[in-house]
Structure formats: C-alpha cells, structure tokens
Length: 212
Image (cartoon, rainbow, N blue to C red):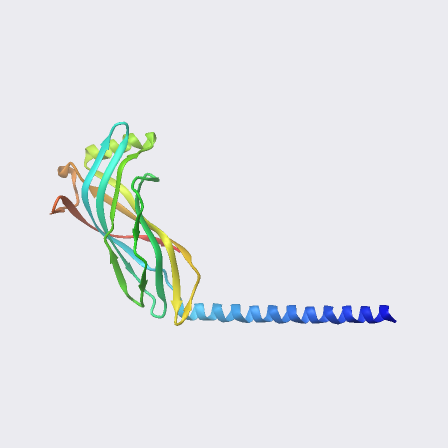
C-alpha cells in the first residue's frame, strides 16, 4: 500500500512539474513576442556618425620607425530615432594606420542622447614614440614625404537603448571613420587647411560606418 502511495505522489509531482514548465515556456514566448512586436513598431536605427574635421599639431616619423603624433578630431553623432534614446556608457577614440593602432585611447565622458539629438565631441588623439610595424614603416615614411596620410579614426565602446522607462542591456558599438589628412608638403595637399594656433585644421565631413 505504501508503494502505491509513493508512486501516486511521484506522478502528481511530475504532472505539476510539466505544467510549470509549460507555463514558463508560454510566458517566455509571450514576452519575446511582445518584445519583437515593439521592436518592429519602433524600428530602431543605429546612430549616424560623421568625422567633421581634424586639426594636426604634430606628426613625426623617427628612426627606428617610431611615430609621434598629436591631433584633434571633431566627431558628431546623430540619433535618428523618434522614440528611442541612447546611453553612451563608454567611447574610446584612437587612430589606426594599415590595421595598426598608432595612438593611445582617449575616453569620452558618458552621455545620454535623446530623440533626434546630435552630440559633438572634439577629443585629442595622440601618441608618443609609438613603435610602427616594419611592414608599415616604409609606407608611413613615404606618406610623410608625400605630404598626406590615410588613417582610420575609430571609436569603440558600449551603448544602451532607452524606450520610455525600459533600458536595455549594454551593446558594443564600433565606429570607423576614414580620414585622408594632408600635412607637411602643402603643395601636394588637395584639401585646404586653416591655421588654428599651432595647428592646421582640415574640413573633412566624412560619414563613418557604425556597427552595433
């Protein structure tokens, strides 16, 4: 008799467990469906970044293939969403040359970007005696003698989305801005520069690629 009661209780617990699992799956499906429908209605769009200008203060290549640079870039970010705000929790700006990082990271203060708002940042990007890979050394020296260089201004960090009171988790954001910057031999420069203090400012207005 005790064996039958034990089996009965086990079956009852198994049925209860199956019901709980079914309820959990249904609830998870409903939450996911609501999220997808809301996301489709809001039609979230990635922020749009533009590299507006670059001011060159110094750019020197010295042996044995060491690079010292100091320049300031102006980057704008526009939120194209009408119902979604963006938290920029972290943004690090740096420059690369032929896939090699040539400056230190420059952090930007966290900021919230409202609907259709535009933020403008002007960080200084620099590096002192940064070793350049041997396979890039010859190209870098040649670019310097030619008076212009093609680099990438990058911004990596984390963002969160805000819809009403709901705030999402953190997402990685990667921004890449191509920049053709003339310096040194001004006769070969195709982009006019404006003297600003000890530097020369070049208007670029380049659209950046954004991956989130």
